[in-house]
Image (tube, rainbow, N blue to C red; front, top):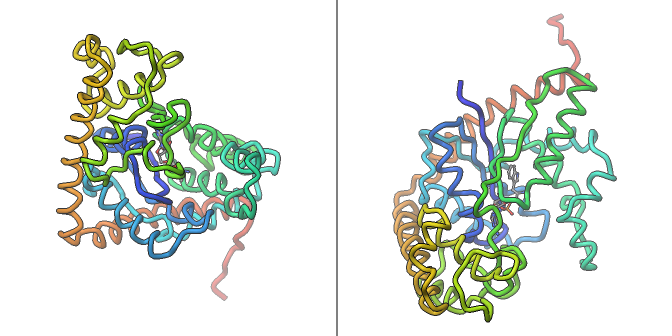
Length: 334
Ligand code: TYM
């Protein structure tokens, strides 16, 4: 039997090439050999206020992009998180089986507190429990993610082990994060020591999958580099150049060494042009498929069928958990 794999993306903004390289592209690759479950984490989006219209647009775009990059509804179960109510219900049960100390250590929340951000929601604080529910409710063996999500998958793992010990030996499958050696953290083009992120303030540091290719080229040409003037892979001393090498390698399905064979003699300007060509080619291919998908109107059908399949799986596990923890009473007929 195929092992089960699950992952999701939270389109609280537009998807960018970090999401593609660190996550989406791997989902497509793995759907061949695993039973793949991929969803849009829309409940996670609202842990921070979203303009409703903008959120709707981002969700539609994200689904269209899932399909555009090659996720195949015949191979993968694709759905919207809020269409499967069981996620939120298990999420609450998991909140009751995790500790304040654990959630206090989650970097996403900790960082925001450290930056002095005000009015953080309770949902943001407990969000790792909901993510654990997303994973555990399907009995996923593996969770392909970028490196920033490792801590969350580890929390899911800890809760699963805890509840298996407390209630029932094999209540939950113990999940493991699956993190690629190359591309699991793409950095900002403007600050190559920090992650490329949807919440980046300026737009110059990140390339959206739906960016106008001309704009994307400009962003690559304007990427921050260094004064060493040698194209080599040295993330410590040349984070900008190394980041561009990873982007070029990942988007052209080659190793960094193979890319280096082409570029190691180049000046930085020429090298950036080389990377920009690869990025533009990839964006054009994805965007052409994206427009076809939007026009085809298949999104509703994909989501309806995906939610039906996912609900069945999720409901079975939720029932079992509720029974194991004593929530359900024996029902008699009289
Ligand atoms: P999110 O939406 O922040 O990111 C989606 C995926 O993209 C990866 N990623 C990156 N990879 C490489 N370089 C980057 N700069 C970069 N930025 C993001 C992330 O690691 C992730 O794999 N909580 C999750 C969504 C989620 C989820 C889940 C994931 C909800 N439930 C269950 C897996 C399983 C999130 O906010 O990801």
